[in-house]
Amino acid sequence: GFCGCFSIDFYRPYFNVTTEDVKERIIVAVDPRRNNFFDIMDNRPDFYGPFWIYTTLIFVLVAAGNMHAYILAVVNDWAFTSRFDFVPIAVSTFYGYGVFVPVIFTFLLKCVGSKEVKFADTICIYGYSLFILGPVFILAIIPSSLFVLIMLVIALGSSTWFLLQNYNEELKKYTGNTRYLLLGFLGLAQIALLITFKWQIFDAVYDKYEHYIEARNTVN
Amino acid sequence: MIGYKLKYVMNPKSRDEGVKELRNWDLWGPLLLCLALAFVLSFKAKEGADTIFGTIFVIIWGGASILTLNAKFLGGKISFFQSVCVLGYCVFPILLASILITLIELGIELPLIVNLPICALALFWAVSSAVGFMKALVNEEKKYLAVYPVILFYLSLSWFVLIAASE
Picture 1 (cartoon, rainbow over the protein chains, first blue to last red):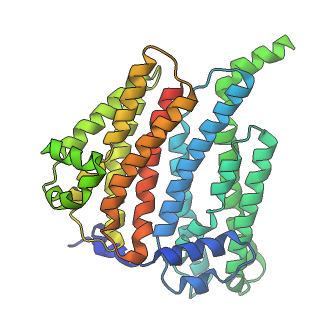
Picture 2 (cartoon, helix red, strand yellow; picture 1 turned 90 degrees about the horizontal axis):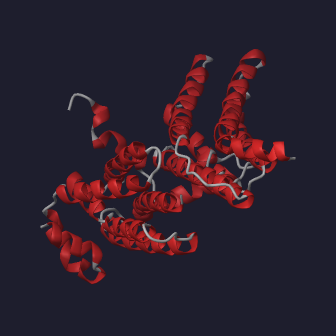
């Protein structure tokens, strides 16, 4: 065919992993001290991990957001309504982050002269770095705003630290402003994620319950 | 034709002999099942019935296509439409669960403790038929990579049924 990216064979090399490979990559990614992700990756970056991790996270996030709302309703004796308005937000956040942030980061690195960095490698490591959000979203069912914030900060801190450890070799080559630019970009993207999850989703469950909360406050 | 495939999905014992017959794929069966599920779920919704209807369509057809592509990328040799057909038919137990819950809830309010096992059973049934099919498509070492998304797919459909039932 004339357009390679619409054929199955174009993508096959990016799914050249076994179940054991994927398990190993996940284990390395949730441990922020490990800096050998690229060694494990062995020049076989995969898109299976990132794609299914993001898809699973979307599902877990929407389910957890709804459970958060359900438990709030049960505890306070309010009527539960399911929330699907945050599905588009979750979908665009994860897939947008998963595609654009690694691509832009790789692009920035190439601009400052990096020779070894590749788009597929970056997409791969970013995908696995967010795996830790899965257990954290499940814990975030607990209806305490502060607890959710703390858990999200820990998770994103861990994934940022993991990325830094693995890009350390690469980043050491640059000094001064260039380095701050790269580090800043990396950190900013993660903070944007934190803000999106906390304020757009977990806090948004409260707005449907606003009239209940107001009623409770006026009674008191 | 539709009846034969439904029997394959519903009856665990017929699975081994039935695989050859599945090559005669059709998309009418999955379409009818999809329409039925979307209708039943939006029937109960007070607001956003049209969103639910559309979402179910997107999840079923989009999901089945993505699962098929996933199996093909991992090296499986299967016809695209045959795979979408089987995955679509395996939605049948979940459709039954949603019809059952909706009919009972016309009369009495069902608590979560009743809805949850019904949905869980439907999920287990759907997943075991679909996984039997998907497992055979890819190499041994990539088997679970093809199977996991199938579980996620039916899990999200059952979740929809459960959420709609709990309102």
